[in-house]
Length: 92
Image 1 (cartoon, one colour):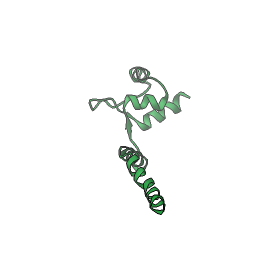
Image 2: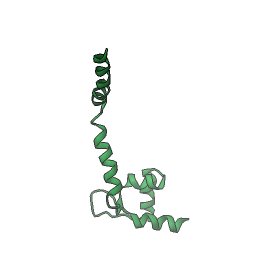
Image 3: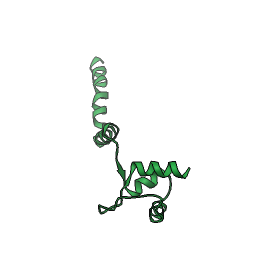
Image 4: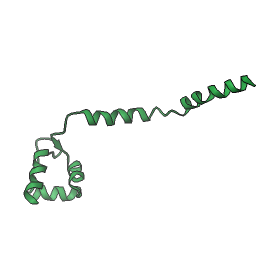
């Protein structure tokens, strides 16, 4: 009977190791990296849309109308953080 108890007591750690999902470890690292990393200086159109709570098409319209300035030096449009803040301050 004591052998059965010892076997049962050893089983949970083995089960815990078997159910551990290694895919969850990289996700935790990614979250901690984002929190501890430096703040972004510029955002892509998609990120800007998420920040402002509007569609990507609306962000592009704001850029076309001159209400939101972007950097066109690279392949993708980048909107500086200070420009997003200026847009919100001036339009409220």
